[in-house]
Image 1 (spheres, rainbow, N blue to C red):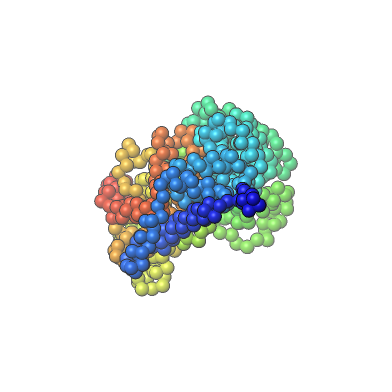
Image 2 (image 1 turned 45 degrees about the vertical axis):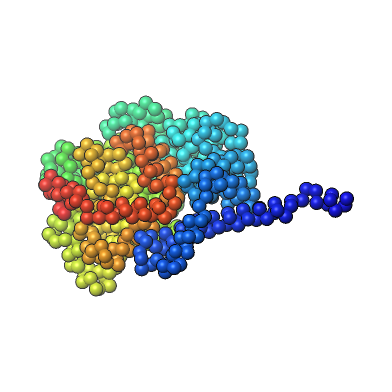
Length: 632
């Protein structure tokens, strides 16, 4: 009898064996997934010379094919993973993105046991789902003690993706408040749009506190609110949804300034108004020499105040205006112009600290410094620059992703700030000229230009420039594909003096394209002359490296899809031309969200190869030459 009662409640050896077999299967599943991922990253374009030997390849494929599971089995393994370690279960949907059953089960597990994973920011998406927020499930109270997510994921709770809810809104502002003010400058456009969904006032309160904590944030908020309070470029039609709220908020922000902070605000905004007003002064002069002279004269009348900065660069004080630099741009009806300034880069915190000291202290400090670099900006009037801001935010996001994982790619997210309805400041890409300008100066191909600039192909300078060209081409090809950027003629493509290619002017993206949204251009621009610079043809090692970098750059951003969706979703209500109803659906589809790494890599490589030397690329360049004399 003693022997029979001793085993009550203890699992049988059979049960233990089954449990360990299932754990073994889970380990094999994860190893298989990681193997596929590593194979794809190590050999992204499936080169034969980098593949496994044939006998090992056959064994590997046999092993991989045996590890596939049905949807219901994956669901069961979510429960097993949770028993082993809840954090393991949370990351399974990232590993197996094509299983709705798995996703549903992980959501159920997180909702039933939120305390097990509330220290994992990535787990929140499985509790605070749109349907759980909509249905006000009681477990949402756990959000009050959840680890902070990224700023953009927190801001998503103030978008049309989620119903307004006090718990999600409290969590979002608590998360945003945990970041330093300078980190919030990047998200100013989304913060202002979040006011649309702020029925309970949490975001308004956060914005006022942020403006108190940082003068530079206060200035950026004021410029952005001034722009978004109106629906038109002239600032006459107020936005019925948030216009009056934003104008009241602006009064609050300015009203809470006093002493040195008020002096800083007056100094900065008066100086900046004087500079932008040049457009209004020169607008009535005819294009040509008369307008150029009027521009220089108006710039000479601007008085530089001590302790001011350019809106695009709050990390640098302006120390001098180049009074000879006023250059009107091409537009006839509007009057944008370019001006150059000498700036001292001292960092955002130091600009704020210095600007809040008295003016006599500032002048004493400025007089002791080293010579400073020149910086050019374009001041636009009558042009909505908010699409450019959004595109450059995404480029900045991609740049951070590539840096974090150590991927050797180059992007230059130059700064753009909207300062008034239809007005903005655009940082000029330093030490660069457009492909169109290069064509006007020398009627040679891009490859010939590289040789004349950097030396013969065999020289170290040419090789370094080619390398820079390839690392930037790959990164911008992915950006152009994800954002569906069009109008890629040669006036919108820059080359810097180190050989990097940089895309500018994002007037057509997502659902818009030139010629009445006909979508004429291919997904990315890989013209014949670009191929020649990258390696004298598509069979060269350097061109194959370009293809590999393209696939790796694409794979690197795929896990961040929902952060990008949130960033764009917050801007949907601005009524920008690029949003025509299907933006988010199409954006998600571009990531091949239901495919693993291997399939996604294959699909994307196919797209890259289909765009290479495409006849529509050459056709669009020819059209632009005939219509606008843009060289190609």
